[in-house]
Image 1 (cartoon, rainbow, N blue to C red):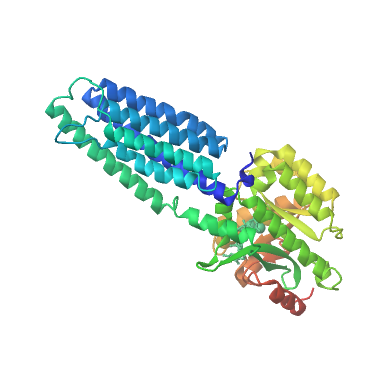
Image 2: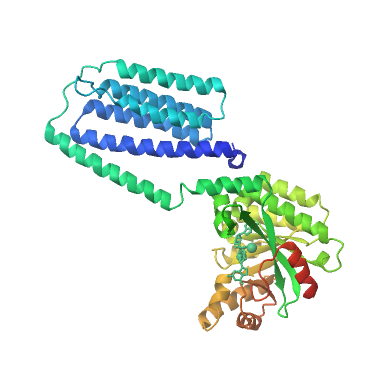
Length: 437
Ligand code: C2E
Ligand code: MG
Ligand code: MG
């Protein structure tokens, strides 16, 4: 199953199972260590068995067989708790058995995992767990050797405490790094995509005199609770969670709608509009096919739409990318190499890739003032582009000094705050009227 075919609910289940798996792994590993220290063979065997039970769950999860993974986890862990109760947890007159209580969080998890599954399955699993719970509360323990001596117990207890603390710190760290909260942002983003709430901002690309030559479409997301979320935050999230494909399709659809709207406009009808494609989009053939078909169906004049691609994919799969770029060219779609200079594409690779434009990354532009070394590097990037017969544009151009330095190197196209910020489409259109080429 492909990553992008998971629904929001399935993605939630996947996340839940991942967390459950991780926690179980940590708990079993610390049990293993503790019992090894205590030299309790029967407990060791039990922990090992538990760990083995997690393997098929991880395997199923990896293959995105969520129902099978959920059931394997629930049944496996129920069996583990049952054995734990029977082997290790001896009820006495003073202390009753308690390990069957572990079944309670398992029931809660099971309820969450099977929330949108058939009622029979959900109720059946819950009933099974409840029956097991009652049974374990009543049955006596197996007759096994006595527990270890008191000093070994104390040491094991200390170790256990330390491991639990480490586990808690680890979990808190996960929370801090956003591993857990991101699910919320992810759900909000998935909803925004599904409800078509993403918009485009258009940033003009200009000549040195500030006359408009084209534009880059940049995706924007205004969330009801969070306000504007930066694409630097949500684009990587979309990439990590398989949302970048639907996002990319929506961005392209909106860009195409704009191009159609401008089609008969004497000025706007001439401007190329660039759309960013992320590496993951380029790796998915079916997705690319859908994009190209969608563009073909528009019947736009040549060069009106441009794709911006980054270096990383070019390095990984130069031959596939060459074929793609040729197809784009045949279909009248222009192509630009975005963030040029930040990747590691070799000259040999670059010279074989039929791009039309190089975009000098803003990182270089920012370093130019008062930095002769940076100027030399930028100059060689520009020369390289020219030798290969490519258009060269600089991005992140923020000051008149940037423009002057870049012009001195032969750059004739610019994009950056010095000229204009990314604008909502209506403002962009008005801006273009005032800055006609
Ligand atoms: P990018 O493609 O390199 O886009 C240029 C980024 O630089 C944009 O940030 C733009 O607003 C910003 N920028 C433009 N001029 C200046 C300037 O003078 N100074 C500074 N400091 N920044 C400037 P934004 O909109 O935040 O986008 C960030 C990145 O997110 C983009 O970098 C691109 O990699 C990605 N992205 C944006 N929209 C899309 C999209 O529709 N699809 C995909 N796959 N990625 C997108
Ligand atoms: Mg770009
Ligand atoms: Mg860029």
